[in-house]
Length: 244
Image 1: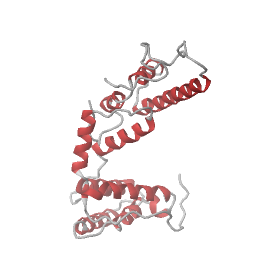
Image 2 (image 1 turned 60 degrees about the vertical axis):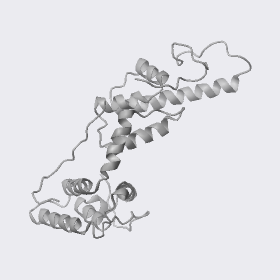
Image 3 (image 1 turned 45 degrees about the horizontal axis):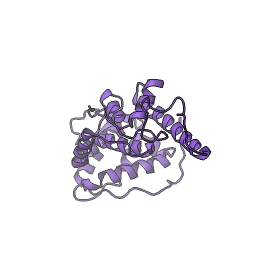
C-alpha cells in the first residue's frame, strides 16, 4: 500500500478540458500522466478527493452543467454514507466523463483500422505494440479475449508467429506480447552477430530460428503477415439514478 504524503504535486498539470471531443484523448492522457507521477500523494490516493480534483480541470460552457451534476452526485454519495476511500466514486466519475465526452469518431476509426488489420512494419515490434494497443484502447476492446489476441497475432510476421507458436504456446494477450518481444530480440541479436562475423558467404542457416522454408534473404525474417475482434468492456458502475 502506498505511503501517502501531503507535499505539493509535481509534474505538468493537464490542459483545461472545455468539452472539445477532439481533445478528449489528449486530456485523458495528460491527466493519467499527472496522476501517475503523483500517485503517492494523499490527494490522488483518496478516490473522492481525486474525483473532485479531476473536476477542477474541466471548465467551459459545454461542460459546466456536467461538472455541477457530478459534483452534486459526489456530495450525495458522501452524505449517504459512502466512504471517501470507496474506489467506486472515482470509477463512476471517470465512466461518466467517458460516456459524455468520448470522441466517438476516434473509436469508430480505431475499430475500422483493426478490422482491416494492423501489420508490424520491418523489425520494430515495440512500435507495433504501441500502435496496436493504442487502437485497442481507442476501440474500447478488451485485451483478454480471443478476438483481440488474434488481431495481435495476425499483424506479426509469419516467421515470428510460427516460432512463438511452436516453442512457447502462449495463451493470454500478455503472454503473446512478452514472448513475441523476446523472440524478436533474439532474432535481432542473432542477425547482428551473423553480420559482425560474416567473412564471406554464409552456407548454413542458424539453428532454431529461421522458418522452415528458405527465405529470399537467409538472414532476414519473413516480414509478410497473413492469418475477429473484441467487444468493449463496461466499467463497474454504482448505477445512481441521477448520474449524468
